[in-house]
Image (cartoon, rainbow, N blue to C red; front, side, top):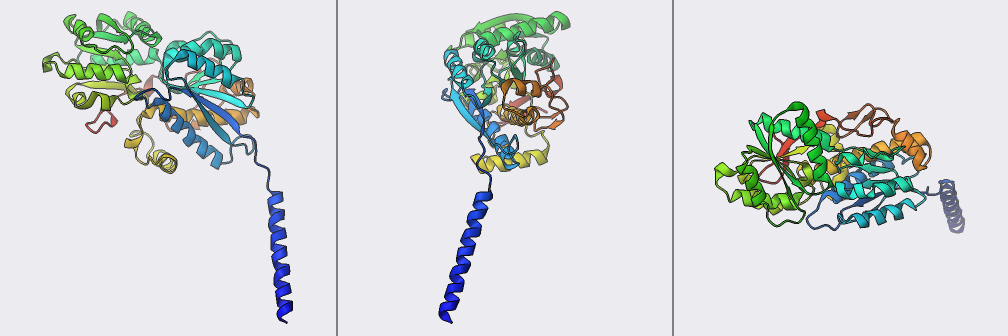
Length: 398
């Protein structure tokens, strides 16, 4: 009887093993991933923008893959390349990425001059390029037919009028421009001249240029002060802006003009570099989104993912928030376009991006993110001004 019972148990174990093996055989093979890339300023000292964009993409990818991926079960995957804000590196990266047959699109980083230098290679290789940060108008207004560049970000022809109007709103009738001597700075000057040519105010007293890696900006600032500026519109990244803030804080209070800044400063460790001086200067920065103003339910859902993936569970812990939020929405829109195209062919996905409808994103609700005549997903009503709290958190001014 013992032998019979043991034999029955042995047969039952064989049946279980056989059934499990059959179940394994019935499962589909792992699908080939669909690849997207990020060509960013990884490795650049003090920069946080590329990492923020990367986290936004990975957060969206996690949600997309947990919901079944794209193209009936294929997972999305991200690969990264670094250019350290050097255009030659970026161009080399684009050529290498474009040669990958399963690569659908490339996300760009913060620096407009790098992207502008990459444009001829993007056109030559017909590489689908998504811009979640860089703001120079020429990135999208590039003359391509068809245009393979799509942006969910600020553009300078929206930013500069908004900043100039904000200067007026705080009582500045005379402003000075302090601009970086790059394609980004020149893009902003052109935008300012167009706006002032139509609006006629505020009065522009002078435009002063500085060079990347300048170690002092105080003499340039004094030129604007002596010219009668009542506020300064600044186009800078974090390093030079921090130098200016420290130098301004050493001036008498009456000589510290309000600074209305473009958002390049939020792409790095500006708060740490500026130090306590930041609270001694009236420093305001343009943004397109604040997670403090987004739908709380959406924010909670997204932060649950970021806490699991990166240990980031609070709004205050999200650095360079525009890069994160823009990249998150762009990735979801791209996934919809891939499914709409039914293929990973870049030209087909490009066409599909112009047809995506009704995406309720983190930044906003998009009726039509892009169309054949509009490759900019954001509009003037998305803009706001923010400032840094003593704890270094970027919050809306109101």
